[in-house]
Image 1 (tube, protein in one colour):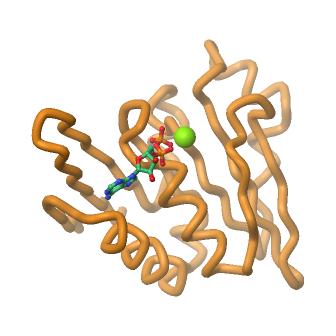
Image 2 (cartoon, protein in one colour):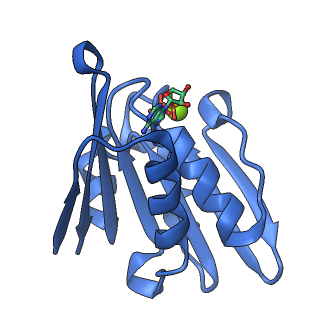
Image 3 (spheres, rainbow, N blue to C red):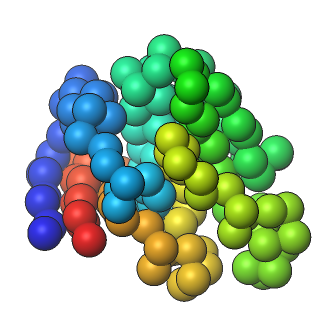
Amino acid sequence: MVQSFENLTLKQVKKLAADLSTQLNNSRAKIGLVGSLGSGKTTFAKQFAHRLGRIRLKSPTFTVIDTHKFGKKILHHIDLYRLRHYSELRAIGFEELLQPNTVILIEWADKFRQVAKQCGLLIEFKFTPQHNRRDVKITFK
Ligand SMILES: Nc1ncnc2c1ncn2[C@@H]1O[C@H](COP(=O)(O)OP(=O)(O)O)[C@@H](O)[C@H]1O
Ligand SMILES: [Mg+2]
């Protein structure tokens, strides 16, 4: 199922993130965030994590994986921006991250086809600077 949202304000994007954080299930434990630099991926991730478990995310660009515990659950926040090969991600344990009670948010999920394929929820951000316009497309697999 695909849902498209056009010309969203910052407030509307945050509402969308908050709403989606309440609609998780096992098949949606891996969430891919896709879109160019500045399109709104981290903004979405931060709001999502805040609503999910009052988690304060930082930008993980330098760390690749940031892990946060909330209650008995775990959220991994991943940024693939600086990686060049899927093997680098596998080497840091990506394939073992998905456990029960785990949510994984992956920025730049389209960088490696293996990763995008695994995401039960894919959220694509499109920013058109000339019109200061932001569209969001959500694919539920
Ligand atoms: N829907 C929106 N409307 C206006 N500004 C937005 C919106 N979404 C994000 N922004 C702003 O755009 C900037 C870049 O967003 P960010 O989430 O860091 O992008 P990315 O992680 O994709 O590089 C931030 O200053 C953020 O506040
Ligand atoms: Mg970012």
